[in-house]
Structure formats: structure tokens, C-alpha cells
Image 1 (tube, helix red, strand yellow):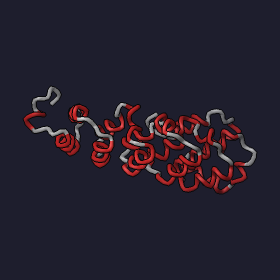
Image 2 (image 1 turned 60 degrees about the horizontal axis):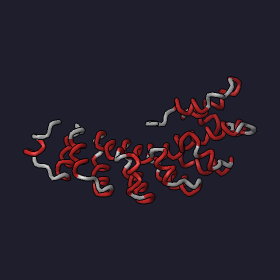
Image 3 (image 1 turned 180 degrees about the vertical axis):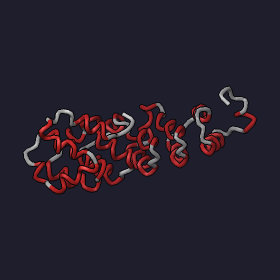
Image 4 (image 1 turned 90 degrees about the vertical axis):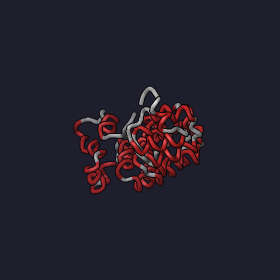
Length: 210
């Protein structure tokens, strides 16, 4: 799952019958005001609908998500639904406070973080503060299961600040730096990778992919 989208949230709510579509539409950013204006709409709803609204809060109003979860008793199992969707939203969108709250509140482990591709999403979307927090909290081996794919994503996207951090943090080996160099189009990222790998212009011009 590469991106969190309104379509995904709509998929979660696909079972909502037509007569209650007003609640389903609340997952859209512009329809959150419906719930705000009429909180009684949430009374008596099924748990899946409440959980879907929790995800909407995580995506569009992250500061409100903890209070909403407390009010409606969101459980660890519900927060983990959809492949740890709430944590995916936090890491992709750069909501560090939300991520800080989700992990201890719902007992998320390193396995949960790896399963939902939190590090890859943060690297792809240039969320350096999230990347630093994930590695600092769960360790550099967080990227091992992904085959350093998180680092590759940062390179491909030209997210130089993330790349600069990951090279020493993950102890990226020279052969991987050279391979990444051949797959990157951003000139600043290429220059950094070449310097990090100790490559001279004469050396990289001899590479088969240059």
C-alpha cells in the first residue's frame, strides 16, 4: 500500500448502506464538519463506522485523533486494522505527535512498523523527522526486512536530506551506494552518493549504466 487515499477510506466503508451514507461521507475532509456539527450522528453506529471515522481524524485532523479514540474506546485491534492504517497515515503525512501517541497507546511493535512499511513511507515522502524517530526508536535494523528499499525510495525521489541521514544510520555498503547511483536522476543526490562511495568522475563514467 503506497499511499493513503480517500478511496481507501471509502473502501473500508463500502458496506455502509445508502440510508446512512451521510456517515460514510464523513471520511472526506470537507465532510468532517458534518460530524462536528451533529455529533449525535455517531451515537448508536456500528464499530466499523466509528473506526473509519477514527482513521479520518488521523488523516485530516491528527490532533483530534487521541481524544476521539478515548471518547469512543478505540482498541488496539481496531487501530491495527487495515495493516496498521493509522500509523501509515502518521508516517506518510509527517504527523510525529500522532505517531508518538499511537505506538505506546496501542502497543505497536517493531514487527508492526515493518509490516505497515512506515519507514518506506516516511522516506518516500521526505519526512526526515519521522525517519529519525523510527530508527531512533526501533533501531537501524528496521530497514533490514525491506532490503534497504527505504533508502532506495529516498534516492529515487531525490530526498537528499533523508539520503544523507540514512547512509551512516543504516551503514549502507559501498556496492549499494554505487547501485543506487546508477538508478538516480537527481543530480544533487547523485553527487552525494558518488562522494559517499568514494567514486571519482573517471570511475563512474566507466560504469555500465552511466
